[in-house]
Image 1 (cartoon, rainbow, N blue to C red):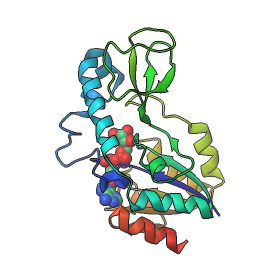
Image 2 (tube, protein in one colour; image 1 turned 45 degrees about the horizontal axis):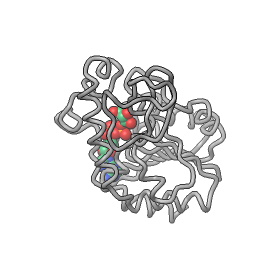
Image 3 (cartoon, rainbow, N blue to C red; image 1 turned 30 degrees about the vertical axis):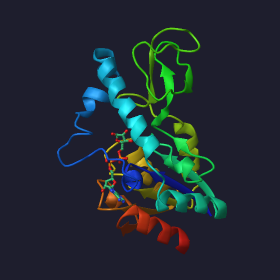
Image 4 (cartoon, rainbow, N blue to C red; image 1 turned 135 degrees about the horizontal axis):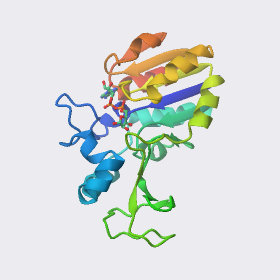
Length: 224
Ligand code: APR
């Protein structure tokens, strides 16, 4: 069976990493447009670096949970394509052999001037030089609002051949990821949503499994 799994912030919530759409509309006390857009970085790089340095240390302190580990097990049994919107490395540390990070990775840096990418130091600041061009234009290698997600051609191709598509812990508010269910359906995949609550795109799924990821994901994997 060919399976595509899409994960979002909800799978890492029980590892202690906060999701994006808290009830107050803020993300770690910031408006998203103040920290997660190219305009924010141009306007106030000190704030943006401070914000992502804090995210990087929170990720380093977090541990993968039973849901991350269950998806690593799933890859042993099936032809799995694991796509995540998360910028943490908990899938990798949970044992997943291959992870497509469509929104980038907090542990990688990107040069805003020459597009060179490299493993990020724990702290980036406005004086961090690009190891390739030498300019002080390092930024986190994260896809911000208004930027193009990574690996879209590969993801679309995998969705077209999937027998089963599962979305885990994602609110369905951010496209193109929120549209993957429609694409998978169009190509006749069975579509299942695993989430704490109904999401914005719940109606597009054939099946819903509701509950905390550390419970429902291992159970779902065992039942496949
Ligand atoms: N188990 C399962 N689901 C959970 C849990 C849990 N323990 N805790 C929260 N959830 C669910 C919430 O109900 C919500 O539907 O996870 C979802 C998290 O939604 P968001 O915070 O919107 O995160 P996500 O969907 O990953 O956001 C997508 O938005 O800000 C951008 O680029 C950022 O990748 C991110 C994208």
